[in-house]
Length: 502
Image 1 (cartoon, one colour):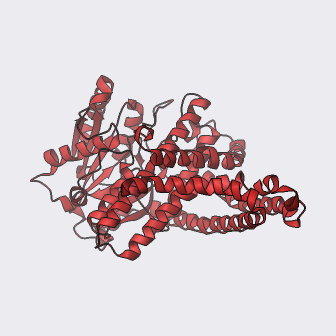
Image 2 (image 1 turned 90 degrees about the vertical axis):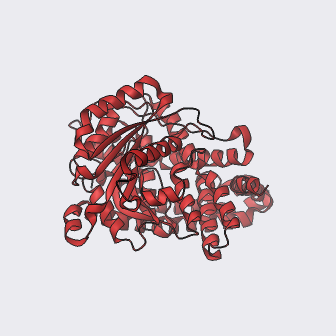
Image 3 (image 1 turned 135 degrees about the vertical axis):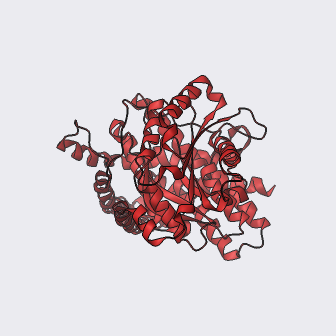
């Protein structure tokens, strides 16, 4: 009964806010107008605040990418040689070109390859295509690492839904049995679960190992890189680039606020912690964020996500047509919005565990609910509902000074906040990978002008899919989302990830 209440909670809060905006714009237009002005000012101040965090992360990331972390490990950290890396790439039907680029990036890492145990985790459901890709990858890369393993996740296992969680859990357990049991201590193994399109930069494992050995309670943490969606950025349309960079910028902002950082997509975690929490859940979509809450509840609140301030590069969402890209973007954002399924798990766990301090429970409850509520409502309130009192307030209100001033005030606040978007456009240029030969100077102007699409992206590819996900969770049953695999493709074969996107 309580679990259903928790499932209904985020969606009901979002819909109550949006419906309340409409109703009160008609009943209490003056009060709503004042609220809108105050909310727009709050949004402006929040934009400035988050921009400062974005630039702080950028500065630290730039320094980290210029550092030889392997040399620092050798000089400053005793026992680093005991740390082994288990690297899992779950895949479905991605083409060989995508997989090859990811594995090539590993071969160019400034880190001993003999300390890398690489697992290509394929799905039985994907048939012969996946097996052929896996065998070709093994043939080309098997001898370059300390160990290379192909695992096949069986289809239709009881208690599972088709998705990444079941595959990576199966792969981790198989790798533990074959490569680790009786040979390595779990506390000395860092498990990196990477989407199959994840390409590392050369110092990633040096930075990861250094950060791991620097943490006071290193076994009770997830280590989170920054996702750059830039592998195929030059093949993507403007709207896909804006959404991809927006996602990257949000993760960068969160890296400078580690107290509220949760796990996302590609990540690294000690094998001992992974075993303690029972590996990734196999009956849900958002396993990459759920794993944090599994650890948080298993260790009674003594668990955290440690920001690496170092990136990995992944694919932007690109289909063969613009319409196909837009549909896939919406589905991807809706899947990310389905992370609201963690709310019942989190709140139910808090209720059952008296060992977690009440202050921590209150903090996370507010942060998570406010985060999903803002996702589903803020951009709609700012860009779509700000003028409602003018249209619904009636003749008396429309004769007032506030009625005539409201559109001008909100427009001014939004225009000022656009300065932050302009600075994001410049930062987006700085994060581009090495330019292809066809990239001309005028393309820089186009890559800045594309940010005029931000209001559209925030509503159509942000608030609406977020609201749909919360609504589906609220309705339950047949409306619940299953796992959707983002299609990956290449126009050509990639090569070595040299240098830095900074």
